[in-house]
Picture 1 (cartoon, rainbow, N blue to C red):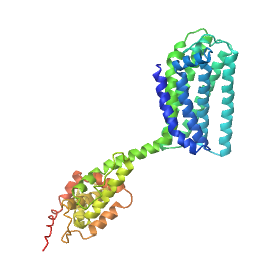
Picture 2 (picture 1 turned 90 degrees about the horizontal axis):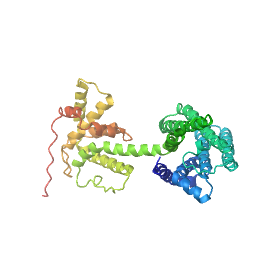
Picture 3 (picture 1 turned 90 degrees about the vertical axis):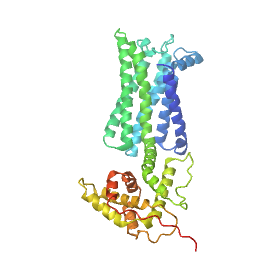
Picture 4 (picture 1 turned 135 degrees about the vertical axis):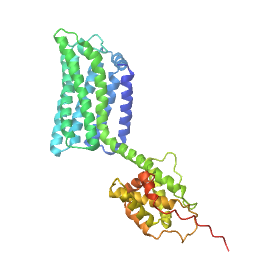
Length: 407
């Protein structure tokens, strides 16, 4: 792997950690928040310290050949522990059980993390190895035990977290389920990394040379696995926000047809369509302005809404060869009535001879109801061929009223 393959994920995860710092500051007592932040932090520094240039620099600064080895192993052990504790707290349950499970995993990995530098100090690793430390010292006393300890801890974490997430994913839906599925993929990669490394180490014990598994195959697996696991934990946290953002933009665009139709019929006094929206405005603000403008324009259209057009259009839809749901048929009739009324430009003057008698406005208000779901449906079918066909049975719209001159 190239150095950028380590540093780019480290930079991305550092940005994610910085984004979570405000949440950590305000919710320090929440174990879930602490675990998420610690996991992202350990993933970032693991990528950074596992990069060959960093390994060389750390060994040179400390003056100890292969000092980076136990350092990276300690960070990986911390990451494995963070995964286990986070899944336990994330899944929840009785508070006492969650606390006991968390403390048990913390105690176990505290022993592992403490043992790694002790075993390294007891062993003898004088030759610096930047990429193949695991296999080069696979038969060296104490260094061998250090390698097996860290790989075993990584393997246990991968197996347990994969099993826990698989069971949990069957019982949940939505973004949480999506995050768990991503986690299963990430933990599966971590499991593959541990198995690949152990295979290369065991091969050394039996006199075989499978070093390529450790130096070529395993590094990209663990790099991808750590990144996927972090994304899996973050997905349920940021997913709802992304979903809401996408939903806001989608609704904004879907209301475009109705917006354009009513925009063509507005009067000079109608300020809703003239509302200035700054270029940096988010989807919610743009959607609110568009929705407000549509409702204001529909209100101005009330005097020209002919309920007779709606009833005739509804009958035409019912008589069509292909049946449509009642709600869709009602929407088509309302759309035909709006298009019929919008065909008369608004002069801004009173028009007592216009066909609206209030029944059309009442039908429109009853159809729309609360929320924006039916407004979106109305905009969707506004220019459909079915609405055009239903509109063809209606009479020609009344002529634009002439402006009265001052006498």
